Length: 121
Image (cartoon, rainbow, N blue to C red; front, side, top):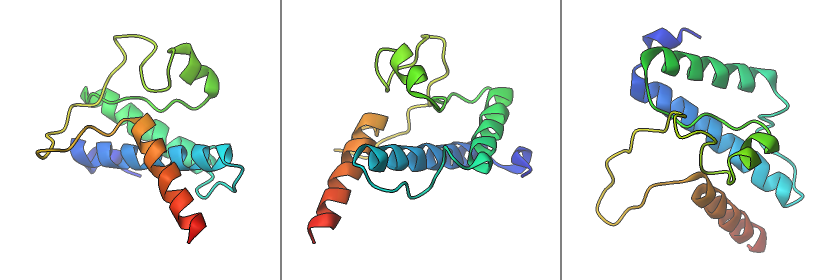
């Protein structure tokens, strides 16, 4: 894919989508269910995310890199904070009144709650 033609916001959105799919897979795996997106098992997902990150780094866009292994997550102390303070972080998006920033932990919790609701209906 020609990532150079996309805006910074488009790159960030695609990257957020890849991180979200990975979070869903990890949450489902933790619940003992089949992974829906198979992000870790599909080389094209990994390539897509790596190329997105490379383009964003080239442009100097701030983002939170995808943590592909449990070792990467635990090396930082928590899954939601970078191991090194110099690690790029996403630009804070303007939030509507009453909204909070979506962190990976908050996203996982929302996904787990949605899956539990779906399984009870």
